[in-house]
Length: 154
Image (cartoon, rainbow, N blue to C red):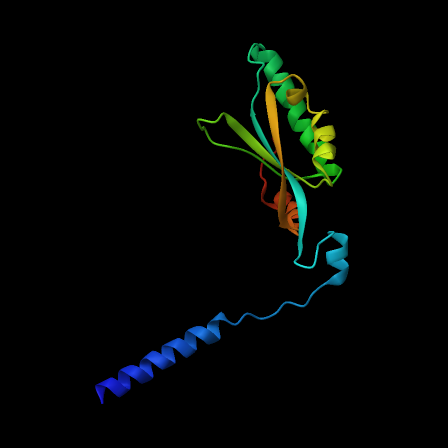
């Protein structure tokens, strides 16, 4: 009897787990997919930029502060152009990585052109490594919510 009860409990647990794994299918939104330039998987290509400490380490603090103010202003322009999807600094690391961008560009060449307008990159205070990156086409959809959770601007 105990064996039968254990088998019934096991089957019940398995069926319960299986039924919970079924997900409700969210209807496909063709208009949104086209707007976001999504492929059939809801994905698209971006350019991942890894910013690292550049070769110019001789600038004064005042000049460096000015270059980074320009860097932040340039990021704002790229957001307005719908080109900058993600940006953020990295914690201390042994590779001298300083931050990342995910750019909504068609090519690495287009991304390089955007970076040419960044004063910190132009002055070689920051260097950039660029890679093609495949991610969700809906990635930028979080941006309008950022303003709602940001208490203080940079």
